[in-house]
Length: 464
Image (tube, rainbow, N blue to C red; front, side):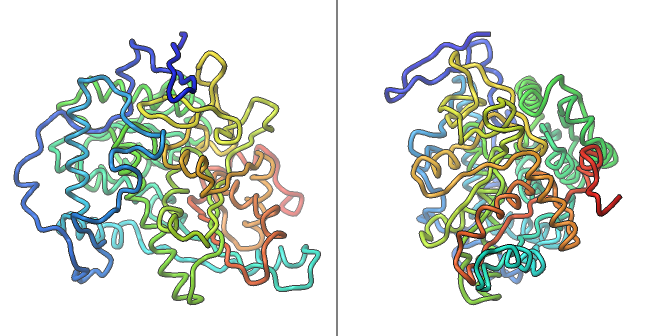
């Protein structure tokens, strides 16, 4: 299928083919929002006994960007006219629940008592000593901390967003949720949230990913979800899930797990994941009386990175470092390094950096960390790159595997292969930092799901 091109601000941008306009990543039921949803006071104090309900006012600039889902030239709504009204309804509901005390208190309770928040900010002492021992300097070196999202219920950060959006689906009167998953972590989190809130759940998953992440497939089924196979990988599963949603608007809610798609989806996911950064700021202040110097996170499409980064975007003295999957190498063509070698285009309903050929065809991504296999990134991540506010680097499959083994051996923590890419970049980052610098790595998922892959790649000689 060929993609026609249009000029956007002087740059050729691939346009979604007309016959594929239905494959837009939008997320709302085709029902009107009930009036009783609007009966609530906007939060103006932190008076909740839970102590962590966010303060919101109607004047708060909590939606960075232009308020319409645009971050510079990125984002927007590249959707057919028939979807504009449902998306506007969803945006209204999203903006409303951000200031709704009842919703926020229920979400805060669920995050605390069900998901297990707050997650620790863990000082990785032996990993810190490892880098000190191999450093050429005689100083103390930087201190490395892990934000332990792997300890959240279902084993990753995905549960934060899944709970919140499942609650919105319920408010909108939906009885059914559809989702797409790659590594399976979002699928498991969505299945768990749907079980908790009595919603029917269908998860679409690529055939290649189902084989690699079979334990997560079993978990989804155990939680009551129907798992449907799609030929291909996560991008193909996403398109199929969207088709299914569009065909069932009256009853079905599309629960996106990452910061892509048309407005307001990227803002919703980022907002519900920003609890990671908010906790990190508070915990850093408690532990050493200041802020982190460097934040490091892997970048697939961007949910765990923005979850950590967003709270600190305004702190120019805090470095934001994202690490993409270089796969078998940038020259191999088998990678997921969208920001490193991609071009700007439109995919799944918004404008961002994409992996695409000269004809605008989307290229197949690759990474040993299945959750990083997406051919694009979110608009806010794209904006952070273009403005230079965040730095982006890459790590190969082999470097990620080595980092996974290193953390397992030194700290007794088996990270997922996705955050192992962030850990791998410490090899290059740490020697450049001053003594005593505080580095926080988002350990966004646990590695149970990747043990088969690690075994297939060969156990380290010390374990044989």
